[in-house]
Image 1 (cartoon, rainbow, N blue to C red):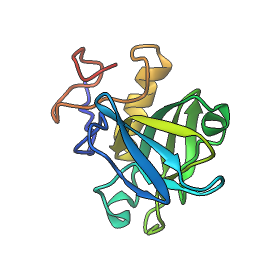
Image 2 (image 1 turned 180 degrees about the horizontal axis):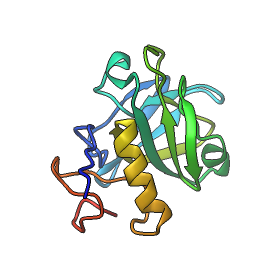
Image 3 (image 1 turned 120 degrees about the horizontal axis):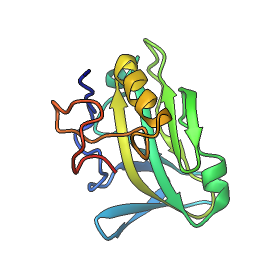
Image 4 (image 1 turned 90 degrees about the horizontal axis):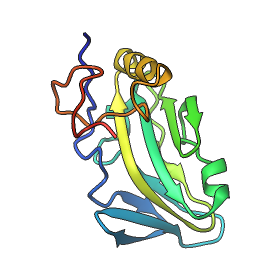
Amino acid sequence: MSEITNLHPDPRCTRARQEWMASISAVGDKWQYTANYADKGAVMCWSPFSNADLSGKVLYARITSDVQAAIDQLAVEHATTIAKADTWIAARVADGNMGNHSINLVPGTIVLQEVGVYTPGDWEHLYALYQKGAIRYPWMAGPRGAQAGQVGLWEL
């Protein structure tokens, strides 16, 4: 069985993320983000990673929102969407891409539920488990040496 590693140090999003033109407030052990202006704002979901760190990786995020437009328009800036369903998205950052990788905000709030940073190979294994119905979302938090499909508290 292959090992899958989520490279992000806070995959459950218990710490506030960097933002641009947005307000942040705690909601239980998560954080909610609201655009300061009607059509602007962004959340750097994968901070503290730099844009250079994310080059060549697959980025995953799952949000919740009371605004359907936030879910419908869910996208990762400067990355190519490779999978998306309901409230989650996965996007591949091209090798050498140093653009800002964030989720743009629309009017209303989002709550960042979980994130992942995976190598393309790890993503393929994880997504295959999701497609087989072995896991609810194509995400795992770790521990660092967790085996693909291994049941544990890190799988939702």
